[in-house]
Length: 270
Ligand SMILES: C[S@@+](CC[C@H](N)C(=O)[O-])C[C@H]1O[C@@H](n2cnc3c(N)ncnc32)[C@H](O)[C@@H]1O
Image 1 (tube, rainbow, N blue to C red):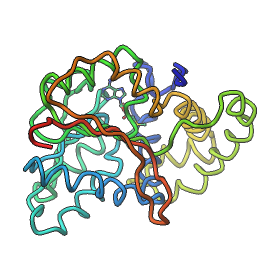
Image 2: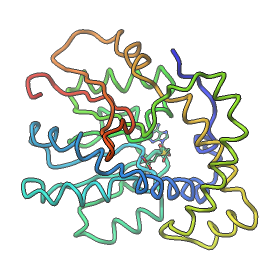
Image 3: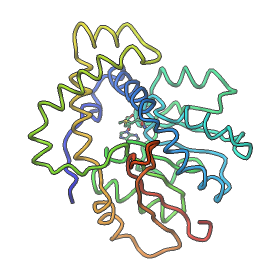
């Protein structure tokens, strides 16, 4: 398996919630820049229509990621104007809960108590999505999620905004430079973070804890991503069943690959 099990600060249960929220709010800015909602829209729309689903249940939602923009994008289609999104996380984001749950008309609800993505079978009905979240699962948990989705015939879309294709020695070689670039990106992206708190500003520009942690977690994410061959290894041990797995690359605006995905669907409804 190419994936390696590095640590990310945000995975530690002792990691402060406000800092985890600050990191995931920065990811929202990055996803907007990358146009991830459109990429996801192309993958998700046919699934919702073919499976006749009216709810997306997002696991590991952080600050909401691309979901609000994705919902707005998909709702432009008349057939999907009643689409709803349920956001969930092992560490629910309190600010996002306030933001989304106070507006009943938004179509977005954030589950207020922790939801562990490894418990996929107990998640509410709908298309399950794991956006930039699956790499947080060590192989045994990752395999368990896939097995459970297949066994319970749950439609599941796993998406990571980048592929894990850089050879590991190059990743180590480029690490110092990559960390500096990511820290600079945080300084540039922070004014676009919403909501922008005094803590986010203080710990970005005066005491730069956020840029340091974001840079490490961002870099560490890459070799943790399951590439297509790694996903094949996880899937190889699953029994044959009425369920299909499709792998591929997202379609970016410029026609280039934009992230990688794995889509699992019940066969008779695919
Ligand atoms: C890199 S963030 C991505 C957030 C969001 N999906 C996005 O694209 O912006 C990963 C998220 O996964 C969550 N997470 C990590 N392990 C989890 C688990 N076992 N179950 C549910 N969420 C988990 C983290 O709390 C974090 O919010």
